[in-house]
Length: 253
Ligand SMILES: O=C(O)c1ccccc1NCC(=O)[C@H](O)[C@H](O)COP(=O)(O)O
Image 1 (cartoon, rainbow, N blue to C red):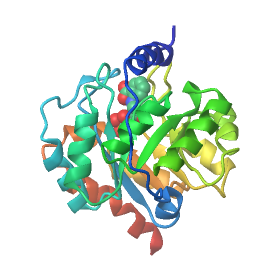
Image 2: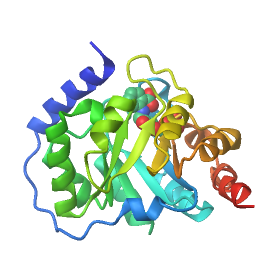
Image 3: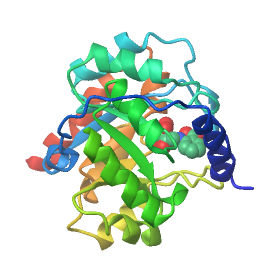
Image 4: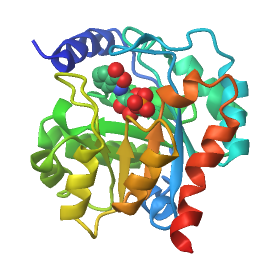
């Protein structure tokens, strides 16, 4: 059984336990507009992961989120899965209450009730993973997310998934460099796909540890990078965020 299948099994159990909740609907932000120009860092709150185990379990997430914002992150991603990442919707709410910049709910979303919880916790956007959803369900959840005021980052791993994501209109697409079967991470996953789809606005996710990686991705066309582990391993993430965001200045000259 693949790891993703295992995670989705857990999510089905979790979702079955969730009550419906009421959410206040708003207009969604437009992630695509936010990321279309320049070069952006989406900084992640990631306490643990299936591939690395504990990264920084005990963390003041409000303080860290404020540090990310002050250092120049455009958006904060919060892992809300408890079983595999030790995250929570409580973390999401704490972060959303602490910062002005948009907050992304990063989870394995398969149901409207998870989107409701993300919205209620203060998220501006949610991740939908093509590999985890039937294309028609992906479209339904994308529409539902926008209806309640969440924009969507659609995650792909290869060209076949990208073709499915491109059927959705006006979505920001993230290419995850982590192979969900082997956990192997290679920036070439993003670089090769981006070079074949020059008109698409892409976020490159996973495996960015320092400025050289960010520079490679920016040079290959990425408009944003999503960085988790490398930032969480820093006692103070300020200089790494500044280093990563500075990549854009280099290419403007
Ligand atoms: O990080 C993992 O081990 C992982 C395993 C299985 C599914 C998803 C996983 N990570 C979620 C993410 O996409 C990353 O947290 C995110 O892209 C940041 O990656 P990194 O900078 O490499 O921590």
